[in-house]
Image 1 (tube, rainbow, N blue to C red):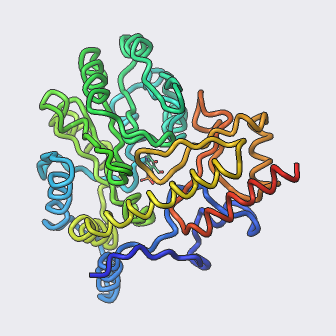
Image 2 (image 1 turned 60 degrees about the vertical axis):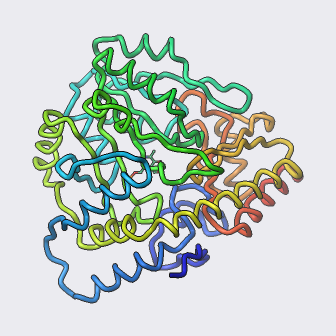
Image 3 (image 1 turned 135 degrees about the vertical axis):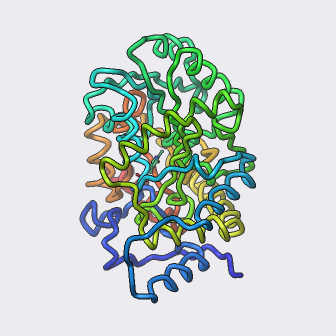
Length: 386
Ligand SMILES: Cc1ncc(COP(=O)(O)O)c(C=O)c1O
């Protein structure tokens, strides 16, 4: 089978959110989807299903469960049982459902900023309290402030810990040591871990991912894990995620919320896409990760040679580069205006990721090298003409 990663440069008439956020002259490196076609096998299976012509109510197939179980066992040595697999259209939907299920208004949820901004929005939108455990930047890397984390977890009003693993936007693949430390602290203080592992397949330069729930029975009983083929295989629009809840009591509560909103439904294409991707996608994924390594190496070299005002440390996972732009000496608004109005590129602006994000941009490098080069050239020229 041909596992080549095919770049697509024309998304016209697909109503891509990424390509319609700004005016046409602005090149988008913003939303986390890729300018690559999904694997051939996935496209073929979806086309085959589309050709049937009836798209009625759909139930999960045995192949759907098997593909999730096998993928996670083979890649991460994580044993999932069929009954542990719950549904959600998207992971952000699941985060909101989780907040509503396990917490009351005014109670707290700990997050580690800078972090994927819907973590912050989902907590605020549900009138819960955002408790910040800001990551500490050390020599272009990040560390967890464990003393602060423990102090925050100790608070009786804190009920959940949102763990971003691997971490968006900083691109860190957490070590087993960090995962064990966090898992133990949460257990000790009766805080449920919500482990968002949506980026866990995208691992660069040999980095290894550990699933929080795979570490021990004690951890799996205290962890809700969010996974999906959406990032890995560019299937976000299919709205099909899996929420793994081994703890029977927690699972029953989640299912009740899901059913109360009638969200416990798979779509015909989501079902086929997920199964096909997890069943046949491993070789394609290996090629994807190699392509992403090349892209980010190119970015690093280009920036180091041509744009000394920016500083990029190569991410360990994800296809998102977290670039330090503090040398430009711009305010949040100033940096945003500079990128969109002067450089004519759209990125995710650091301040939206919460405390610690100001002065950075998040640049999505899942596209052609030519597009990356064009984006970086635009930044370089905008700085030179400033
Ligand atoms: C950490 C993280 N969680 C969740 C999502 C998206 O989840 P969904 O589109 O399934 O709601 C993203 C997308 O970028 C993400 O980075």
